Length: 435
Image 1 (tube, rainbow, N blue to C red):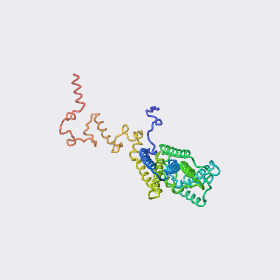
Image 2: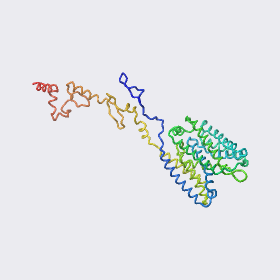
Image 3: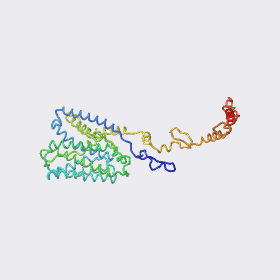
């Protein structure tokens, strides 16, 4: 530890002073407690819905039991994670459903060449689409919803003219493979949530959030990487969905791109990811995916009189409220932030505290206002020390000479001091003691 040492002139070296001032552009730390409380609530709700599914004697859960639910849950978690990543970097990817459809189509069509070639074709198509989308979002600075809408529309037009893929020749993914895919999807979601929970990561995402759309924020590389990662996760979701839904004969069923996009956006927002970017939880995406998918399966098993797809759309509306809750709980008082950031600052002591020889007073805000009001008192004390009469100095702060202006004139207590002077009285005392 280095200490300030005085130089020859008695001044401290200004280059070795310790600065405790917080940078003005440093964003205040987010409050993660709101995410923890909300995720606990999602876990309890999701667990209750899954328990209700196990008590149903009909529906998709009763037909396929846990393996079918896991096979459907793994793509949902991957898609919700893809949407959450794009939201965190401020470029919402509304093309996750179409990208999943493209990857599934390529995977099924190339299945005759083996699993390795099929995986390469499916994931490669998703990665190429992600590069195009990331270029539009990061380098051309197009809004995420517009760029992803254009890419999703292009994929939709292509799918309408491409027809059905070839027959799926691979065997269905076994139960161990389904559980491995589910564990990988949940693990990736938790990993991305933990990375996004670090203050350093959120600090790097802050300029993207604060900069208006279309202007340079200096985080183009992060946006490019986030959008590319989102597209890759969407492609993986399409591959898993196609591999776990293998029909007995004919071409494999392809996923619905619009339903997948709505489901992914609803689960991501309901899990605590802010629609404004940067903020999000850790486990919320996984728990929200379980809750939304469980509610859709429960509605089908109980025979409710509406399309279960409305549950996914309702999750988006509920996600708007969750976003408002997250933003409101993370709003910090500006005065509190200003006082906290200036705490311990040596500059405040230099600016506000009076220096030797300065005169003035402190105002209501605590700032020292220098004036020359004490100079009059300095003159009076100088006259007093030289044996003069302080009541006849004529200074503005001390009463002038005269009975009416003398506050002690009526009492006469100090008449002997004023008449004889300090020198005479002390001189008499000295003579008395001298005797």
